[in-house]
Length: 366
Image (tube, rainbow, N blue to C red; front, side, top):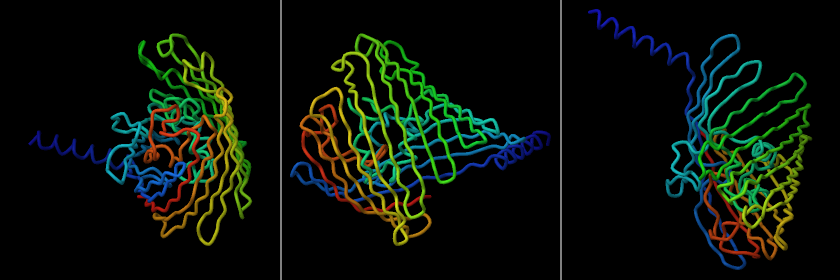
């Protein structure tokens, strides 16, 4: 009898704990049909992740009292067209996010695999939220002149610590450190990132500085990458324009580091139209390390909601590459890989070719 009472007491305690914690399952399923032209070579395909990545996750909070709560987030991406994990998942159980933290009136402190503030500047201000149709997304695929670093690890990083400090006058501070935690074979390096986000009514300004210290084991010498990016938006109601500027500087021998200096400028806007949302943007990337490796891009997309959770979309995007550039049209992180995967510095099978893509798709949130 005592054993039964003890078991019932344990079950009751577990039930109370489950009720005290708020756990949610969330995600999205997104697929689209793309028609792609690379210098006169046409290809079509069913792709995944045109508006958001197809992904699923578990997140939860527990109220500790006095305005303090513990939170966690576990998020994994997948491809709808074939059910596989996305490029760059590297066998991770939760490739997008895996973190645990605590927050209160003093801000939030979190640990684990998390998005960098550097990346969030783009994701939070881009007219398409950095998805298919964004003029910036071609420059996010890993490579020597990529916004996400030559290995793509500046979207999110492992072993990171982030402290977010809000203020009463609209300024939010993001302090972020990611540690390599590897030996001589370390290719990730340590990341130090600060971002300031200022909101005043309909006006938003974001600025980020990222410093990445790469280990000597990669090239035989230590080197560093630095990124500065600024973005500003203002919601006029009839439209919401954005200007985004990014500058990258890499030390050391560029042939060894495979990392170019560049600057990039984006101008775009998002406009409510006929019950949906029309987005358009244009970008220019100027390569400062390699001659004739500049690129222009233009993208536009229209999203129309069928319900609160489901929307359809269609658009067109184009990239004009310099003679030594090979940027492809990207749907954004955690989506299907681009057409024409290859082994050059841009991860494509073409250099100096222009590319256009037409697409139509559907997205469902749950």
